[in-house]
Image 1 (cartoon, rainbow, N blue to C red):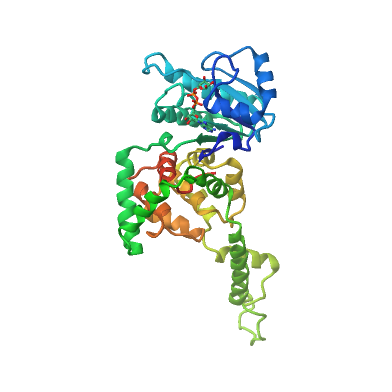
Image 2 (image 1 turned 180 degrees about the vertical axis):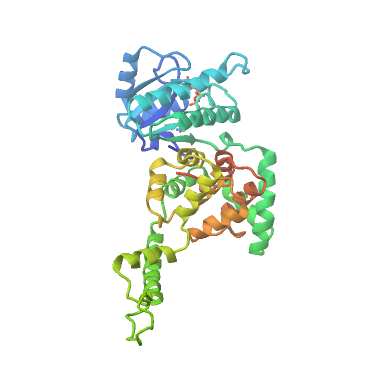
Length: 384
Ligand code: AR6
């Protein structure tokens, strides 16, 4: 049930439903509304005509027709009039009602644009805050397994604030340059890349891939380590004993017997260190959290959490480990310990790692805030 921010054209999203930033007539218009109608084809307009309009703050569902999405949820956002006319509440209500419709229809994935932040003039940063807060509230309360995408079309929509951006840029720049030994060129190159026309689209696929990819390659390592440990277990248990002279005492316990199969299993378990899964569950208990509090705070899907919970040798991806470390509010040391359990470490030669370090060092443990910064720096996001 995570919230994932992506940069994309919403008409390309393969989800159960995309949300349209419509007007009260529901008969189409410019902006994202125009793009959705163009991509869905004329049958969408036919169905919309039959709906007879929609009030501000409310939403209606139609089919998706030619779109990759199965459904379109049309939500009517408020026109910005300085913030004095209940705009915030009406905008929040668009998100809530759309999510409710998705839940009622058993939809598992839904993608929102930043409603009202274009033609309707709602300041983008404020619109983003309302969207995030409302979606988070919903996800924290719902029992439904739903993945919510917030689709950002242009860079300006996700402004983490000049001061924060500059601070992170300096923090990352200093350490990154030291570890790479080429001080001036990194941000110069990065800025250059911002000017490339394909830039605004370039992030999406890799981010989605990243979000969905739990490092399967690592499973090989996991089985290799089991095999190695099995050998070690057998070695340490010893081969069948060479006949020894009878001991004096008849009560002496037999020693050096070849282990039975079940004993080997137990010995292997004992020999393996505390795994990532073990450590995660231990930390959740130590923090007095419930499982769902933890995975929701980590922005992690319940199904993924269950997998980790049931497989003590599960190999998570690095962003997954970090998402849990953030949810558990681990300090840098503990975060590195947890990462090591999964075969990773934080380094200064990696922008993603440095941004994580920046937040942990400041005791800032809001996954969504961290994701905004990761997004601004074109990095893979936490959670899935
Ligand atoms: N994919 C994702 N986001 C988009 C796309 C896209 N293809 N196109 C635009 N956006 P707007 P509103 C972003 O104006 O402010 C229409 O005429 C855009 O950058 O589409 O709610 C309706 O019929 C902005 O951040 O919707 C209404 O009359 C956000 O989508 C009126 O506009 C919303 O911009 C609604 O205005």
